[in-house]
Image (cartoon, rainbow, N blue to C red):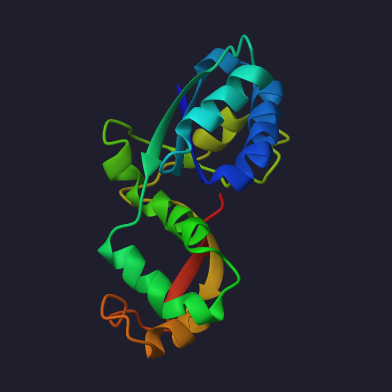
Amino acid sequence: IVDIAMCMNRVQFIGALAAINSIVRNTKHPRNISFHFVVGVGESLELLESIRQSFPDPGFRYEIKEFGPNPLLEDYIRAGRVFTYATPESQVMNFSRFYLPQIYPSLGKVIYLDADLVVRADIADLLHLGSLEGHVLAAVPDGTFDSWVEYLKKDSRHLRHIEPDQPTFNAGV
């Protein structure tokens, strides 16, 4: 089984349907694909209906769970509101990927993908690419937290521990 997680709000549903289609079309064994979607509060029925309309006989498994803000995320969003074009709802969904172990506690190894991508090869190859060798995740390096400096200057008591020179990663794949 290839477990794939995607976190999104309703604005990203169309992109997610394209991503799902690209994954299913390019895998040798679509029945081995299991999608685990995380959406905003009150959005699960809309995604469910979109999937049913786009894939009447899907040939893959999926489940949808809702995720809402918590005090840490609310504090972060409040501190950074002046510095971002993103809505508070989309910011919550950006961080929901970090809560996947709590949202889907029974899953083991999971491939996380942003909802706005196209997969052009068999996704199972990525799952079997290598061992995590005891690490929690594998990711693509993406600079440092320097871009967070403005957030850290604000009144965000939950973010004071972040050091701007620490490395970050591309969270989309």
